[in-house]
Amino acid sequence: MQSARNLSDRIQWLLDRKVFLILAIFLLISLNIFVLDKISYVFHPFVVILETVFLPFLLTGVAFYLLNPLVDYMESRNVKRVYSIVALYLLIITILTLIFMKVIPLLSEQITSLIVQFPVYSQDAQTKFEELVGNEYFNQVQDLLGIDTSKLVDDFSSRASALLSNAWSGIGGIVGRITETVLAIITVPFILFYLLKDRKKLTPFVLGFVPTKLRDRSFRVMMEMNHQISSYIRGQIVISCCIGVLLYIGYLIIGLDYSLVLAVIAACTSIVPYLGPAIAITPALIVAMMTSPVMLVKMIIIWTIVQLIEGKFISPQIMGKTMRVHPITIIFVIITAGNLFGLIGIILAVPGYAILKVITTHLFRWFKQRTGLYDEPVAESAATE
Image (cartoon, rainbow, N blue to C red; front, side, top):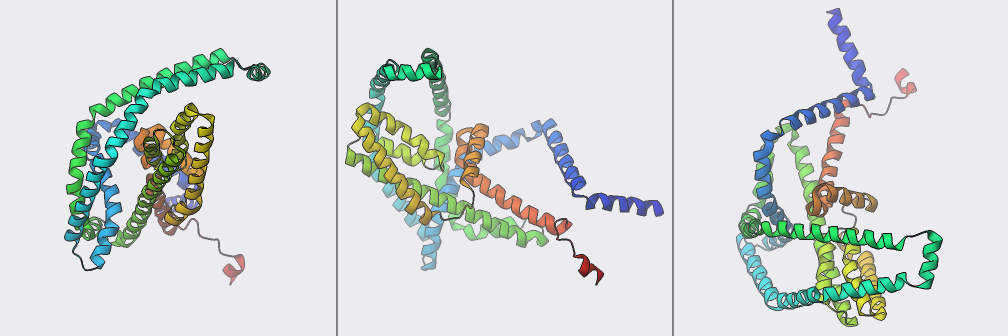
């Protein structure tokens, strides 16, 4: 009896020491990872299923967060959800038809022209680079800094060749997934219809699998995650569309070639925060630089104006401080996710981080409440009383 009490006291002493508790938790997590790695083949069927349903549910989720506020608003006006969904579907079909009739032909024409002119732009860029290398002042700077131009050119050529090779292999992979993508797009309207129609039944259904004592906390976590994701998706898409429209208007004003293509590229890449605009400006810089120095200056002015409008007026009004994530953190999260998961990781990095942040925050709060390890120590005066 005395030995059991001593053992209990020793265990309690270890639990009272934060270092030992953290090491024990880390050891258990590491052990679980090791075991799961050894039996990873067991999860292969689940991985295949996840890869199959991932794209349809991703597209459906984005469409749901865009359309659900409209359906809720119409329901508040005593319009049945089914009628609201059908009306929105008809509106979307009309808009897509107009886009395919009016925008797609122009976009296709500009893309074709850009592909045809790309070798000319490449040759002009090479000529200007050779002129820069042969410049007297450049040679002086080169000698001062000890730069080997020929090595730079060879390195650039090898990197460009590798980039083109990877691009072609990537295109081959995309072509191989055309059927999968088309099937995913076809299934999206059907999944989205039932998701919008039965939206109010979804939360109680999910909470039905959660133990009764944890339902209140789980409900708060779900609501907070839903708020984070919906705010980010709606806000980022609206901001990207605004950037694309403003740049298209600006490019038309200055007469930049391939204005629609460049604006569409900017709108698509702006979905990625902070890094997207830096990527989007590259093709516009190349086209403007190959046109004329004056056009390059005009393009930079238009881009600066649009970025100022977006940073000072559009983003604060639409996004506000919903994410509450520091920009440096977002940049590192995007880079890490891109290295781990590629393009999909870049797109899903920020909302994925927001979800993990919500879950981790609530788990840490629960851990503090259960263990009491982070309670403030009682003052000695209060203890003596």
